[in-house]
Amino acid sequence: MAEANHTSAPLGATAVLVLADGAILWGRGFGAEGAAVGEICFNTAMTGYQEVMTDSSYAGQIITFTFPHIGNVGTNIEDVEALNPHALGMIVREDVTDPSSFRSTSHLDQWMKTNGRIGISGIDTRALTRRIRIAGAPNGVIAHDANGAFDLDALLAQAKAWPGLEGMDLAKEVSTLQSYKWDQGLWALGQGYEGVSTALDTNGVGEDSENTPFVPSAVEGRGVRPHVVAIDYGLKHNILRNLVAAGARVTVVPATATTEDVMAHRPDGVFLSNGPGDPAATGEYAVPVIRDVLDKGLPVFGICLGHQLLALAVGAKTLKMHQGHRGANHPVKRLEDNAVEITSMNHGFAVDAVTLPANAKPTHVSLFDGSNAGFELTDKKAFSVQYHPEASPGPQDSHYLFEKFVGGLK
Image (tube, rainbow, N blue to C red):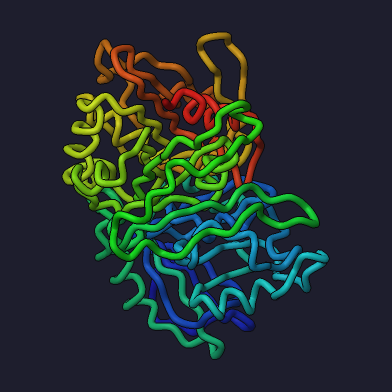
């Protein structure tokens, strides 16, 4: 790895990754041309690169994929977790090949171009991953130019000037701007998704459909679906699908929704979504609302950023992790019975377990590093997990949490 300067790109190089410490990694560009600055992280999942790229939790980040064959199944219109990609770019080892999947509707290269996202191949992703594991997640710039023309000093200056994710509130940038209802269920091969998500609820309240008959298997015998209001800090669509599959009616509200906005929908329970950025920054406006909801006695379920925000709401603290957890193979121990769940994770911040109050009982712990992966309140109907039980991509060991939440609503 060389120090930044104005030297010409090596023969055949059309993309470059410049880290804030001056390291330069040359490669071959694909997707959109241009430059983007953010935090360089790595993801160990062997499947689901399209779901990863569209996960709002990756806003402000450039993803190093440790699995070498990214792009081999192409892309399609179904495997997305948000309307648009939020990861800034992708770093891969092998060149993107033509897709080999009957579900593919577009080449990954074209999909990246269409969505304005930059890719670089030909990188030693194992060496970069080791670098991140040893030194922590660095800031950097990914740049693509078909002619191989780069101002390395300018790119280095951009990488050094970027402030990093600590202290940054990104939930407002990725959240919906208005409330809407969601009734799309889980996907099945040959059938697609059950139901169709409804149009945006432009008046912010929506029609009253609390008596809509619905008897899903997860809550057999229930004639009326309980109503869940999901606060969108950057949520993944598959979370909403799992809530519907578990038997809920779902209304989504913006990250900045007030207590009055939430309560106007007459919820039976409140869901706190995943999302990007520093939970302490988002918590400045989210925590007062969560505390109000808890004080009103409403059941609460949080995932990822929602887990961290619930912790902040009860007086705990969060911290920036050295490298974060990102992948679909993370073992988590469930403390009540010592069962191990293989989970999907994506977070660079964590709850500081030693700061949890006495009424916050730890329920799950990461077997990778012992960090807190879940807790529940002993004096209220509220619980949360740091990992992603909805998967997409990843295992489905933890789908039971959606049934636990929805099944416990009145």
